[in-house]
Each structure stands twice: as C-alpha cells, then as structure tokens.
Image (cartoon, rainbow, N blue to C red; front, side, top):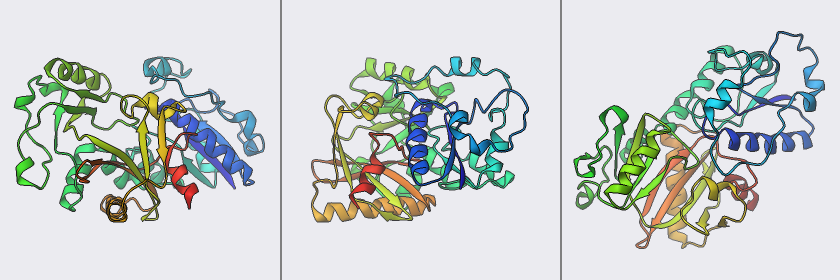
Length: 343
C-alpha cells in the first residue's frame, strides 16, 4: 500500500508526533508498504510540481526525525519558518499527497490532530485515515465535556471546574464545580492541593500541581500560556495507570511510576525517567474494574478503533478516570505499544 503517515502540525506535541510518525513509518516499511512521513503544516516542497511516482522515492520525501527535546516546541518559530506563510493549516501538497495514498496513518497528537478538525476535513475530501472519527475525537479532546460524559455513564473522575482566561480568578474559593463526583460528601468546592491543566492539551504540557495560593496563581499563568481555557481538578494522591483499548477490548493495564516528580512531559519521553510495569500488579477485582471503565470510556465517546485511557488509584483502591487519548503515542517510551506487546 501507499501510505502517508501524517505528523507534526502546530500542536505543543509536535515533536512527540514526529517520533510517533517515525516509529510507525519504520514498522510499516518493514511490512512492505511505501510510506511517506509528512509534516501536515510544512507540507512537501513550496511549489507546484508533478507528484507522479512520488511513492517510489519515499525516503527522499519523508521528514527526517530527531530525538524528542526535553521542552515543548516554540510554535511561533515553527510558524515563521514556513516558506509560503499561508493561513492554510495544511502545508503545500498535503491534501494532494493524502488523496494519492491508499490511507493516511494519523500520527498527530494534540490540537488540530486529535480534536476532530482534520478528520472532518478528510471526510469531506474523501481521504481514508486511521483512528476515530471527527465527533468522537472532538469529544475526547474537550476535558470538560468528556468528564461530564464519563460521570453520566457512572465512570468515576476527579471533581473539577473549568475556567476561561477572560474570567480568570486567582481565588480558588470562588471556583464553582463544573463536573462534580457522584458522592455527596465530595460535592464541596476544590481546595489545595489541586491540579491545573490546559483544557485540550496533552503530554502534560502546561500541567501543574498547586499546594497554596502562590503556586495556584503560577499554575494559572502556566496553563493560560498554552490555551485560553483550563481545567482545575482535585488532587488525587495515588498510583497512575493507563489502559489501551483496541476495537473496544481492553489491553493489559500498565502502571507508570516516575522516578522523580509526576508524569510530566520530560518523564514521559526521556528513557529511564519512569518505571513502567505491564501487566500492572493489581488485584483481579481492580484489574477487571479498571479495564471495564476503559472499555466504557471508548463506548461513551465512540472511540471504535484504538485509544488509551489514563487512571489514578488512591490508597483505598478508588479508581479515577483522568482522560482518553484518541491517537496514543507510538514513541520508544509510549504505553500502548508496551501493552499490545504483552498480548
């Protein structure tokens, strides 16, 4: 098959996406496919040209990928480096190459990759692609909406609230609850410590844990640096897990234990920064319940191909669903491939 692996873009996870795309491209080539690794924003070439036979020279055309840096990319510099400076999100020849392919492998992460916009455009262009459709992608990307759907289906999640930059308040006591938990005793407001995160971001970019008013103000500053909307959640102290789901069937659970701090951007992509155990050492009852919740998440959001859902487990073995990932990473340290390898 002739396959375009689409990566890059203008998300804070741009560099991670390239590494996913690189790993996927190598695997597809090993299986005999003709693969072009393409940056959706930069495109291929900055001029019109005859693309006939381009899948016969895929190595020449493909993006060359480096290791993931320890910090998120400077997107202003990325925008400024595009030669045509067009307002079109799709770079030169991207749509044409995707239409020429048999299918597009979506190796994109974050905004305009996992939020359903590209999927919707591809539907209109008649381009086949991997992963979930536009609506389920959009629902999963919106942390507030997805949590409301989780709770409506009986899937437990940390209580939390949303905040827009225009309505910013540095007083946590004034924060109302947007998505409460089901138990009455936990319907009170959010207090310290709390977690502040961008509304639609991924890879823990812009995420902070605040223990007091000064840290809370700094956490709001950091999250609003990346997006205009954010989520504030109660802090749940516990072990962290992730559960991949393929065609709505849960894979073995993986536990993630950072060597230092929490599972932030650096710890996710720097080898040796976290200890990952799969299958996770859990009781049979907790294992079955967590896998069931992961399958429920896929069903509620309509994630009908593959996905990955993140969980916390507190000291009383209460499970909390954090979020769903519609295009999980495929980097050397990513979780879904490790889970799939077990089976």
